[in-house]
Amino acid sequence: MSIKKIDYSLYLVTDRSLVPEGKTFLGQIERALEGGVTLVQLREKDTETGPFIELAFKVKELTRKYGVPLLINDRLDVALAVDAEGVHIGQDDMPLTQARLILGPKKIIGVSCNTKEEAAIAIRDGADYLGIGAIWFTSTKKNIKTPLEVEGLQSILKSMEEHPIPTVAIGGISAKNASRLIEGSDTGKIHVDGLAIVSAIMAAEDPRIACEELTSVINKSLNTVGVKINTTVDDALDFAVQAAKNVRTIAPMVHHITNYVVINDNANATLAVGASPIMSTNGQELEELAAVNGAMLLNMGTLNDVDMMIRAAQVNARNNNPVVLDPVGCGATTYRKETTQRFLDECDLTVIKGNAGEILSLAGLGGKSRGVDSVGENEEKVMVDAVKLLAKQNNCVIGLTGPTDYISDGNRVFAIDSGDAYLPLITGSGCMVSSIVACFAAANKDDYLLATVAAILTVTVASEISAVREYVNGPGTFRAALIDELYNISNSPELIKRHAKLRSLQ
Image 1: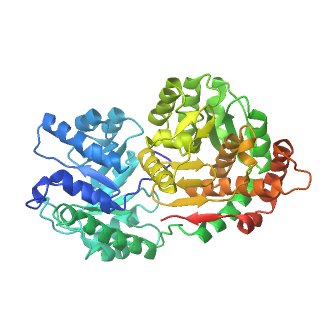
Image 2: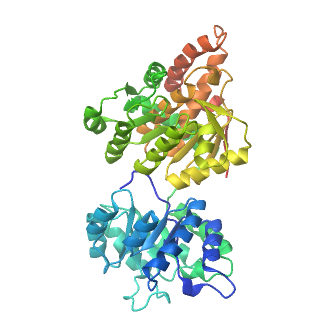
Image 3: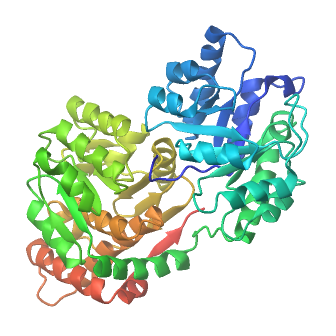
């Protein structure tokens, strides 16, 4: 199971029979995605395999466009054929353990449950989430068992308190009863993570408006039951101060497989903020290091043993260690493009941190790479679109660094305007930022977006303080002063609040 989070809050289950006259099936899905749907399940009970696959490819084109996972109901063969993000299976479908063997560890597998016993078995067998229902009677499913209603959902949630996994409720849910369901089923320890909606979206005259209303109701209710979505500048700055303290207190080991040009500076920067660097490139010790590691940093600057780097990412993900990728020069050559795609396809990445050229290249939104430098100027909207899209598509945090830094998890976006002009004039300053991101991710696993924001703030604020030191006369003296100020900020993190230039872009 991934160490990252899927947003289950507004989960669309499709049904072609509900599409209003004059509307199209794909059009309804796209309008729903525009309105804020966070996950789509394609359900086609009576469609033959060939047409089902053809339709699934069309739906996947839409979900990919909006960076939303696509799940296939029941049919593993269809999910494999279109490389969907996962499947949802019922109690009478293929056993979960067999489905996992076929799909592998990276795919999402959800299981329908109606009782405490079914929930316990699904959790034991490794389900990624549970679809609990039916909550109320619904026209989309025939011969359902007695509806659970709010009390039945709460009873199942209570039974999961010792072994919680994400849950969505399904069956007869609309904007009118969503709040009562979410707030009424809260156990005090866990709550439902999202609502699976069929009719209220597929049958809507305008699914975008329906989804915007549902999103507002769901978020308000999740906030009522204690889900805090840190979106303000004050939230991020408070987090940054504590995050810096956590790095020094926990002193995590950070395994670097980085480029030879910057290895010394990366190690010194890691030490300066209170973490412990190890710079091993020996594949024989990956397993042992991952068992005691805090985070894994992979830097593509000097690519040598790519297979070993990918194995390092995979073994660290299995140990629940965040994996940070710095895709240095990813758009510069065919080999680098192909290697980057391997990292995206084969690794469970937590953060991708690159410069504007690299991130825009990954997002297919323009931008060029020349060696390790970013080339070209791009407007803020392009940057924001790029980080949000990539974050959603790859289920990770994206950090784009430049004159203004942009960081997103696909929903929240922060912009950092701090940073001195000397910073891009020293070789590997971006690589140093990636090292600090790995340090902060290792010590602050509760929110990787804010950990990344905190890390980049730490470096950019340190650069501004360094630049005004009396003896700093250029890039050479600035480089030494930067390490000093990283150390000073990690010991006095309130400096981050004092100097940060941070914006929340919603």
